[in-house]
Image (tube, rainbow, N blue to C red; front, side):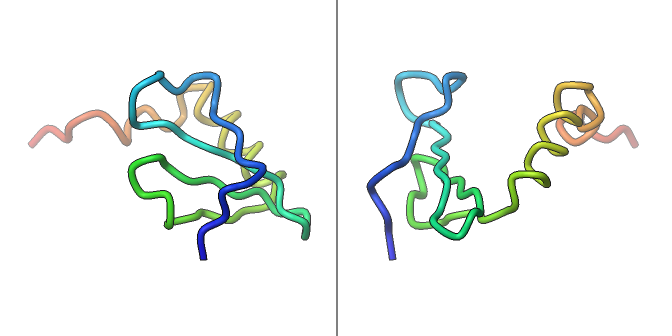
Length: 70
């Protein structure tokens, strides 16, 4: 089921496509979706998402976007 209300677009998302949307659900969870696949929703706890954001800001996930050498 697709929810279209209460979604907020990330301020880091460009104006055209590839936008990330987020919302707080009634049960206290955080939901995220990507504009190209809006029916796929990731649900997590705000605390877990905070850990993810802090790790990304610190560069701890940079290796995930770097091609493996081999």
